[in-house]
Amino acid sequence: MSLKIVMMFLGWIFTIVPLLVFLVISTVMIVGAGKDDDLIKALTLMGVSIFLMGAITLAIVYLTNLI
Image (cartoon, rainbow, N blue to C red; front, top):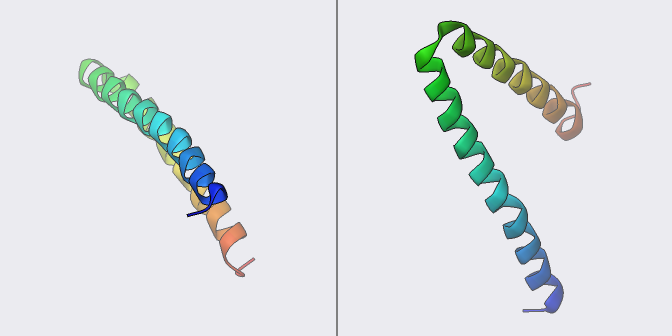
């Protein structure tokens, strides 16, 4: 195993772990707020839907030859 591979592995770990922690905490907070108020739940679900549509569009554009 070379030093380059070890550094790439550590870099990905240091990127993915905080991102996952942030996403888990955000999801728990959104679910908790959504149980209290239906408007908050609707707005957060709409925001997540718009984000997912944008992410899927970018993935299609960058990873395929469709467009």
